[in-house]
Image 1: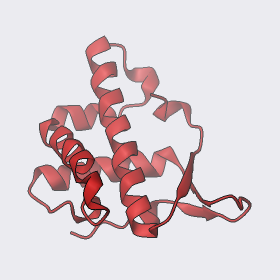
Image 2 (image 1 turned 90 degrees about the horizontal axis):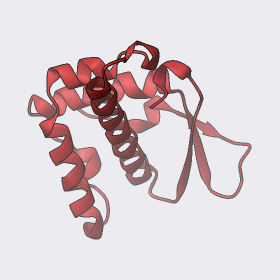
Image 3 (image 1 turned 30 degrees about the vertical axis):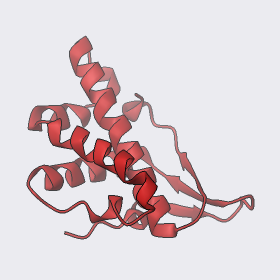
Length: 128
């Protein structure tokens, strides 16, 4: 399946110092968790490996992290922050969401092929 990070965000035309994007966490994180499920099921993570060769190690580390997640980790990451009371769930949720942010950022930067900025809007349900 083809993953397009540009479908998850909008361009912020008010900023002129670089190309900025606005993304809502309630759109970003569920889409990334769905993408992680596809990767775990064997889909090819092309969006991570189209960039510079010197960044391949970072992409491999992200891929390795995602492949270690299980269905429970991904399901619990979708829970609103306020519903996470077990410290283990909070830690795994944070790890999944942070990996999702890093994966998305890398994929978006590769897709745009220039320096970018990302503004993830505030939503307490998706707080890390």
